[in-house]
Image (cartoon, rainbow over all chains, first blue to last red; front, side, top):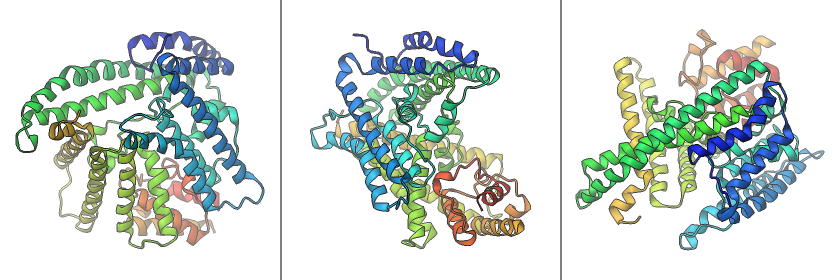
Length: 407
Length: 80
């Protein structure tokens, strides 16, 4: 049976283009063939989860039914007359929505590193979308539940495997309208451009750094593993090479997902905005895997801080901001996986954020003490880049292999 | 009445950012300039609630729509 994993090789784009042609032609004549869009999505979803992946296919169907029921129930609760909008019901709804993800994420920890049978490609990203919707229903920003639109949003196939994570209200605005011919031509052009750039990123640069260079440098670094902490020049090489691989591979994928979305008339938000030109870590998180970091910012950090301030649980603004960073980055670390290096990666970023805030406060207090010019800007960019690369070395798990010999 | 809202909002922003720039240059981007971050945003929403009775939940906060002092004033006036 044919099984096609999204964007795994250039042939995939050939099949995609065939499937997309009727959509493109229709859009050029300002028509959305909605039944065809759904059929196209279903076929490509089927191709991801059929054959040897059939157990994942069953899991995603069960998951979709479950999340539909949870979302429908909470929306019903929030929109009925005189809804009490109880905090306990809200917490229950969020808990139920993320329960499958918690289950899947923690299974390997308890069952010998085995993946859960309820897991499937993209479960995290789907769960982020649902949890976001429930929080917006709590705030009264999403006021109705429309089954077809909900499913279109949840299962939007170009972004299903790894995002970018869209927002319901934004997505539906695009979904409901048909762009003018001029707008669509613009989208088509940007879409093609993104896909071409994605090719260069993922299949040329990502391949070069990740498949050609990285194994060799890792091998060299392993040869020096008896040094103090395994420190060696090749290890520095692993740090840079892995960081480049991580960026070009993921940014390439994201460009594909955004490009294909554009061709379907959906302006899925971008995931990367020149992250390695950031001048501090706060700026970095505004430019790196943006839809994820904005999700964590809006749905965890801001809500956590809002709750704590409103109920006056912690008065100090600084302590609260710092605690918020710790919560956010710990959750992000654990979400990546329950290993020491992902959790350390999370704590590392929280600490750098806290130090950055302290530094910004210090500079603001002592205006005029520090020069601010092109040179200091370049220095900040270089410093931030290295802090980030160091965190990616942690993230890569290579240190686990180097120090403890676990592969 | 409208001026009251404007003054109140600008005062809140001056307090939060610790800078008079928001009054001198009400079209500056508060997020790009680093004057306002997520923490400041939450404080802004809470102050708007307590001082003006404007109930703006986190869900309604979109950085592009709330980017400058002028935009924030317009947003608050529309929610009054």
